[in-house]
Image (cartoon, rainbow, N blue to C red):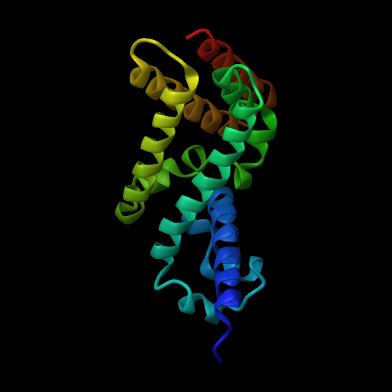
Length: 185
């Protein structure tokens, strides 16, 4: 049965949104096609009408995850006099740590992406875009790209570590320490 183009596009968007969320929460291996389709309110069989493979979905979902988290960061920076402080405050905090499904794809998926050649291309494009945005928005005068790389790498690493440890006090300390340290760059 053929569905109207608008309905098909809306279903495609729902699948992407749920895949972006579930991949960030569970990883690529932990979120199967059946889980994603169920979360989107669709049957497993409808998947191949939208994506040729799970790998193709992973590539598109990485893009969606970056769009979602990037847009949220941009909004927070737009509302602030100091974009860098707004970025650090929005990125290195307990709510972001505790909601990987709505958070940064880099911190949630970087180790998995490193083992997925097809996904690495899309991931790389988005990391480059993030570095460009940071360089443009943070107003540094010298060594802008190096500072952006350092800031992004430290923030992503801190978030990943804060999520990984089982000591809440240490987790908070990691976020606070790195936020404070990066704020002085």
